[in-house]
Length: 233
Length: 227
Picture (cartoon, rainbow over the protein chains, first blue to last red):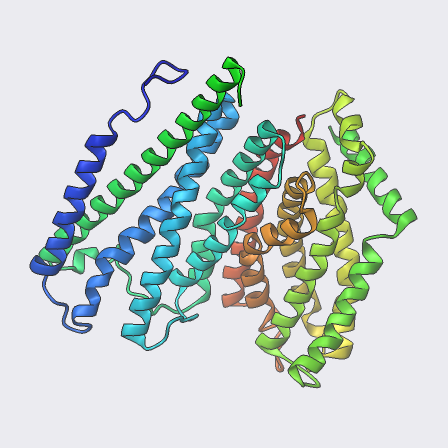
């Protein structure tokens, strides 16, 4: 099946999917059988291998969505807007997963489902609240070209907001959240390895899911265009 | 460019003076909110963190009222089209609207801050004023930049009154953080005048925010005005 640009849709989907499944399987195996049990928190700490990669991929997804939006505004190619939309949309889903896993971890280690006294979770919540308005904004604009343009503007502003927000919230609260990446040199080698495998697996998952969604959307658009040409809706 | 901004700004302020649709509403809203806070918190006077919190939340929500109305007249009465036909730099509208919003916020604070000092604030306001002014100015610039951008985004949508605050409030959280943390020691009993150590960090945060989002708003605004 070929698309308007001549390139095939769904190219590489099978490879990506197999790679993702393999990576996630390896990551889970490592998490449960290879990584050592952490001294202070015990078994619960293992959720870190899921929660932190989810958080990192979510934030990168938002920022990448902003970068793609810049590409859209510069080139006026609607495909960049589609990619931006899918990246942000997927990051929203991964973000909800991050908040849930974070709450579970918080409840387990600190006894509360939610703590204000730590900046990372709070910054994340604010960012999620902001991006939750992305889809209402998009779908409240009827004209498709304007919709794409406005969504790109929002994605750029919100993408720039991500680091700013982290800075602001971190300044304002005392840390309680374990500082993972800064202290990853303090992680024993086994944990570091498991962490990076998990990170790769979650990144692959994100890329695969985005590819699926992009393929589905493009196929649907192509189908609509073809049926319109042929004269039936 | 400067002439265009001046002309647009003059139009904005003239319209506001004649219709008085934003500023009196904002000021009244602020004073009423202070009364509501009195009942909600069941306190006669507040200071420190509480005072800073009440002041900043009230200012923020009053600003939302102005943000909601900022581009409505242009949208409904063809102001955008007229502007697009003129051979001027489109960012002039951003600057003019942001300056107008800044002016509305200044008037709001002229009313709201003394009202706060009268109604709810425990420690005397007089000493805190010079430093508080600096914090307010820095924060207002940020609110103006983001507010104008969000207003332009929201005005074209169907649910503009709803989306405006929904978009603006998360974006303005760093302003609330910077503003409230910076003002909290100013509004405490036993405040010593002079900008001290912990304050500089918040002023820098506000300044950085203003710079980053001012530049982004300037870069991105043109794309909102095309048709």
